[in-house]
Image (cartoon, rainbow, N blue to C red; front, top):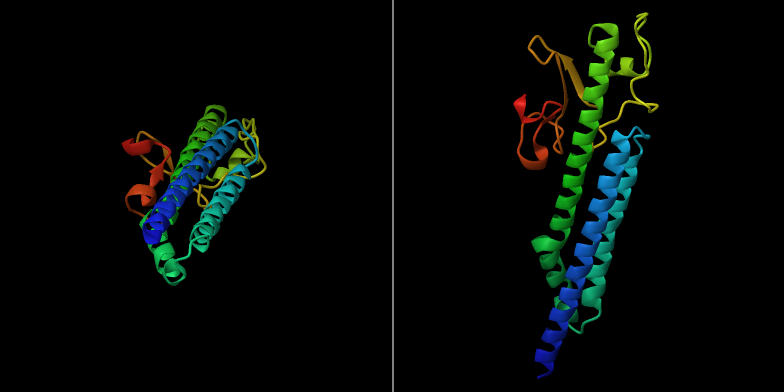
Amino acid sequence: MNESLNNVEKIFMLLAFMVSVVVLVLATETFAQNAAQQESSKVESTSQKEADSVAQADVDTVDKNMDKLFNSTDHANKRPEETDRLRSLFAIPWLKGKLEKTKVTTTLSNLATLKTAVRNFKMDVGDYPDRLEELLTTNGSEKWDGPYLDMKSIPKDGWDMDFIYILTDDTFGFDIKSYGADKKSGGDGVNKDLSCWGDNW
């Protein structure tokens, strides 16, 4: 009987923990979306670092809550195994997956901002910039009417990596890319390469 009660208690505590995880995920997504909107509205690029910091704090909180869940039961001999099993099954991978998706959202927002800035540069100067830094400092042309970004530095992707900017000979004229979470060419999901032209590239 006592064993059954302990199991019921454990199930209720686990459900309560899962609710807290959902709340943390929603809070993280809301913060990241606000940071991305602020970035596209021309604020400093430190918003992404703040979003990452909050999201990472949520991951740490999940770890602590998971430990607290099992420390509150009398299954002392099973705590480490059960804690590791639940972490590996859903809690930490799920939350970290959400964190990666917010980084994709931020990357797409920054790509859109840079794409617009490069186009505005061309409208004034007549050619695309050789480097993204020319969006902030003059390239010597009398037609330069920047800066074309209201920030002190070129924004980075969601994984704090510099964007890859290249001039092309096709109808696009240029491309701005991020290699995604794995920081290398190719991949699927959050590892997929992201272009300022979307899937049309």
